Structure formats: structure tokens, C-alpha cells
Amino acid sequence: AQTVTQSQPEMSVQEAETVTLSCTYDTSENNYYLFWYKQPPSRQMILVIRQEAYKQQNATENRFSVNFQKAAKSFSLKISDSQLGDTAMYFCAFMKQGTNSGYALNFGKGTSLLVTP
Amino acid sequence: GAVVSQHPSRVICKSGTSVKIECRSLDFQATTMFWYRQFPKQSLMLMATSNEGSKATYEQGVEKDKFLINHASLTLSTLTVTSAHPEDSSFYICSARRTGGEKLFFGSGTQLSVL
Image 1 (cartoon, rainbow over the protein chains, first blue to last red):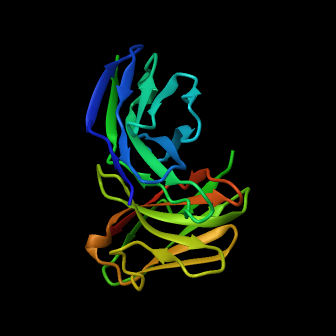
Image 2 (cartoon, each protein chain N blue to C red):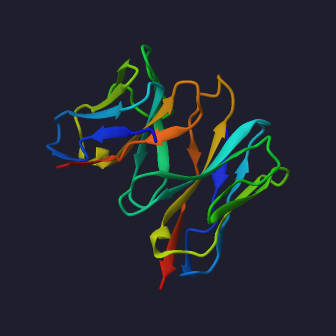
């Protein structure tokens, strides 16, 4: 079974600053996907960024980037130039790759991020 | 982008009654749909995986007779909470996988309150 650990229950950052959210995972799989999802107060799940494990290059999406360390099983999310709208719960998630994987997401417990003016 | 509609967004019911929640993929075919449960300030816990035309696969500890899942078409899955009890009160979220891909698209969730 895969486990996803987010060791920071709560974090805060000032507007325009940079913040990094941590995520580690445990798996014996070699092929998988990793995701960061954002859940604002509306509770709608929003995909922030996605990384395929076979890719060495770290994924980036505008102000969001990841530091993917496969050997260390670490997948941190960096948010640059933080905005008030980034205030949300952030979940790290794991998905096995392959047609027999089921494609289910396994979520960490989440990090509550507060962006302050 | 792909849209998943979940209905109702909020429902209040009496203990002992049944409630049906619908999850529809509006602009794509979803071979697989997932149902999650989320308690306040907690993570999403996978309840079951449903594949179109076949029986759902339930996670350990989830009562299949209590949480009935039907995935009769490529665009619709339903979750029925039978004989609801106050401890079933929770936020339920569905997600759908587009056929041939690994991206999941989420519904907006249903807050169930059982009195």
C-alpha cells in the first residue's frame, strides 16, 4: 500500500512571498504519478500540478513548481509570489500508473495554507 | 476543460431514510468514477471505485450494502446512502476518469447532514 505524508498541518505566508509545502510518499512501484490538489473554502478540488515519476524534469505551472526527488520519495510544492487566492487546503496525492492500477488517488492529510496581506 | 456535475450540493435527511447522490461527466465519457468521503478538516478517503457496467469495488471498511453505487452509463454514477444515520453525515465527492487518460476530474461535492 502507498502512504502519502504531509508533515505540515498548517502554514502561513505573506502575500508576494514564496512558500514550500512538503510531501513524502512510500511505494514499491516504479511507475506512478504525483499530484498537488488545492481545495479552497468552496471545497472544489482543483488540480494544481502533476508529475510523472519517469520524468526527471520538475513540473512547473506558472507560479507553482515542484521539487521531485524520486530516490528520496519527496515531492514538495513551491508557490512563488503568493496571492490571497492561494489560501486553501493543499493535498499531495499518489496514483499508480498502468491499466491495472485502478487510477485511484491516495491523498495525504493536507496542509492548510493561509496567505496574509 | 472536462466538467463533472455532482448533485445535490447539499442535502438534509432524517435518520433511516435513503439519499441518492448523482455524479455526471458532462462533456466526456468516464469509464471509471470514484467516490470519496471527507470529514471536516480531514483528507479525502476513497470509498469505492466504479467501472461502467460492472460492480463497484469497495475499500476495506466501507459497507457495500449501505453505500450502493451504480454506474450504469459512461456519464453517470450514483451513490445511494441507505438507512442513513447521523454518523453518515459527511462531505461526499465524486471524481471521474476520462476514458484513455489518467487525469481525474472532480465534482463539487455533496454535504450530507442526517438528523
